[in-house]
Length: 272
Length: 259
Image (cartoon, rainbow over all chains, first blue to last red):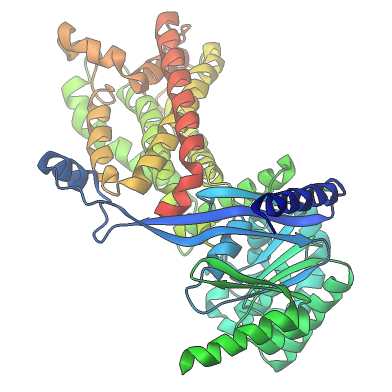
């Protein structure tokens, strides 16, 4: 195939994509995403140091680390996409960008739909607040409306299995109880897109079953799922597509079993 | 329907309410006197200042406690709200790294919280006015104008400081010194007349003093605030507000990487 043909083929493919775009079938569209973190060995974070260094002309060059480089993929509505990769591959950074916490250095992200980020459960809890007050506070952080929480309050308490502990300060909760409450609030909205970062293993075995049932029932309603997990079994169980990231690059994208098998193979060969 | 986080006003309003509530409850938690401290604190400070300075300036200033308190409540609001807004991004760093929340919400909520404290301190001012037999004037309503401009000024300064504080953590120390200078340049506890005429120009340039003098004219002296002072305050406040909003909107996206 000549170069010209290749380019023509790429061009045609792009056109097809645009057609689907118009149908609004794409939930998440990531185009040439690059994320850089600036790091210096000793960070200047005071004005005093900044002035001294400038006067002495002793400013350390900032080092840029590319955590993600030129990543492009599409997630269609109703897809359940697993994200695989070794520690430090950039999975969590990718999820944080998709959740709107970080702004990418280059590239473009389009998200169609309401996102429920389950990155860290109960991140906004105030430990002196009771469970009840925290439901409202955390709901506010997750951009819910007051009436909505009032209406669903009983449902949250019931799902969290906290019973009368809901009236105690969260600082007296065990980590499992905290996670249960966080999960109950975060999954309350009916999101279009669910972003999950290894949190399905919260609580005791009973709650774990309940939470995965909850996710499954949301999936039945056609929610798009993005899941980071180190458990191949879990990914194969939940997802139908998979993305494999290594050192910030997209290595493979495709059907879940194919990618998982290739990933496991590479992990094994890497060990040898 | 496509919907993103925090794109409706009611979501933001609810978040603001919850954030202010969090600040208020954490302030009054575990203290026996609770909300009473909000009254006692300025009252005690006023008593100390009155006891000391009314001997010095008592003859030059009519009703010293009211003169002092009227300046003090304005200055305290300015100082506490700008300092709170300055810290608002850094002190919520943990949260901002984990959930997406518009960052300015934290600055706004701190300023709202300080505004509530400011309103509470009015009760003391009016109480002291009653006890000392000061006259109440209809022009007091006009005090809304300098207060509104002061709030604008606080928003601008607060947003600028919040950005600076995430990049340079020692801004807080510098700003503490700055507010101290500002306090002495606001004629809180002495009459402006004792300052040499040449130095008085510093006072007229100080927007916080502009707010204080307009407030005193309206509430304590019962006259319509000096229009040129008000105009100066308005220009200054709107300019700073504009700069603050602009600076913050430029840096907002980058802040998550710095905290």
